[in-house]
Length: 93
Image (tube, rainbow, N blue to C red):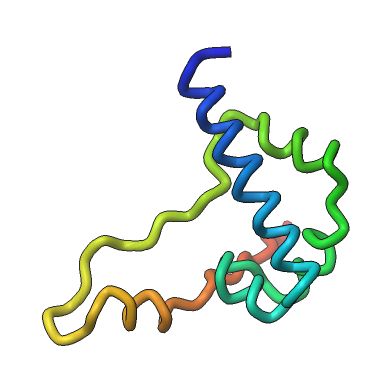
């Protein structure tokens, strides 16, 4: 495993652990902070350590980055607070 893959796996693991603990303690906050649909919070709260390790090793980032630009009249904090999670649509066919 390359250094980049190891770093991504470590970041993914830490992020998923934080998401799980937040989902267990405050589901609504977890949905907002991690940009996850409220329906998925129960699933995340139930992740085992083995499942988190498995998901962490996919060699892709599970963290979503926020945009670094905003309009001149809106602070980055305000812009971020107003962002809503993107709904995933099931493909028909």
